[in-house]
Image (cartoon, rainbow, N blue to C red):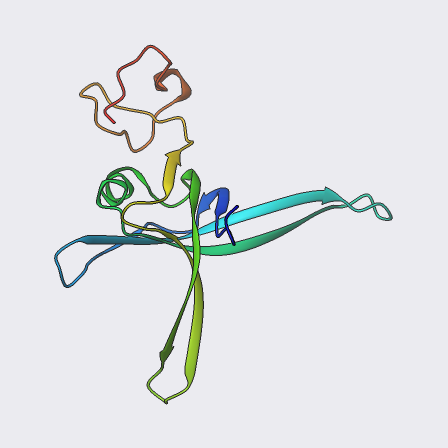
Length: 143
């Protein structure tokens, strides 16, 4: 049996468009913030309540980075499977800072697009389309 497991599974929506950077070795690195929310009804007031958690996701896998760059945007719903990693650095004032991220490494991790996509007549993603143009299960999806 393994001594420990570091695995994170999240389903949520992007808070803004992904950020694409290039590492020193020329590989693309994509990062985005992912919101996961839970909802419940307050037993006393009957009011609907919610709580949102924000997660920083970093993609080092070149194939997944390419998909993120092409198809993800603010509001996209995704399934992410990765590992937690905490980085430490010093800011300009010399104060130690920490950030914990969900990392999809070069050879590990999974990303699944959960949105129903819409495409224009040429097969390119449409900015806004009515629901009659959504891609069905028999349509050709470009990824």
